[in-house]
Image: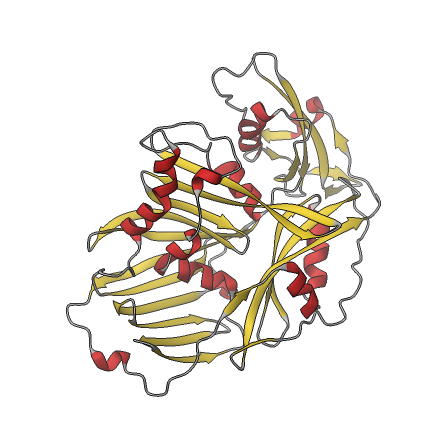
Length: 425
């Protein structure tokens, strides 16, 4: 299976665990308590002024993901926010029941909304989350809690599993991952009685990770009422999350999907894509969720950018729409990847990290995992079907750090598969 945006996060995040009191009641209360400790915009919080700078950490020169956020906050119903990216800007004023919003650009990007919400309204991502109802099998540690949830996606007869996961460290939010939203919280500092994460990172896809950093955070001793004055009340841009039947009903003459030949991996399976649609009905962003083949995910994302949807109108205004689309694919093998045995692959490796198995794992237990190595020598995906669950986490975490020298075919670097075997000594 492809380690997608959200599956990768939940596999590598941590072994799920209990925090403090060893009972599920305390775990169930954890999201609410973590939000109360860290969210700046709760009733009774002190007025503040904040600035955030958003950049792509993996490529700071990429202006596509540059952005800035500034907010003056006096109360939950009295604040002024400015959001700027290369292609979009928003000035939003909230004063009591009235709002005034000014927009430039056709689309408020999902990646920017995620970071704004993560910084200023983290409770929204945790609303309704009951950690005691998770689908994983937690193990106790002293300070950390992680829970993962399986969600069903698709429409009969095509269905898939997608994932959400939430982690807490020392009672504070460490990460929140669900379809269409990925945020990690670090560098907590004290401010006005709160524990505030001064850095929030967002995983977009392999090789692309964004960071929102607080560059200024100060208390407002006295708010200037003129700053929050509503000159001309307007509605507020909404982004509506909808189910798959509704999303497909909005599609205008969707073309049949084309599935190109693959060099390796499964030739039939399912995949899910998170789709973000602008007010004009055009697809603006796509994110791969759980997939049986990364190449098919890439093919689906590329084709979906050409889909057109009927605009969704609410209160007479077109709104942005997001949701999951699930597809079954069937293709064939063409120009297959070279397959290296365990011994051949280890000779090709320039960096090997052996897994550290949990104490008590039965000695002699063995498993094999197939990895796809890119032209650059990094591991692009893994297929752990022949790996016992007891070895899964340790092996995947170790493999993610392996590095290989380029594998040459006809004198040129090429991707290759490697079957790596691991045993508990």
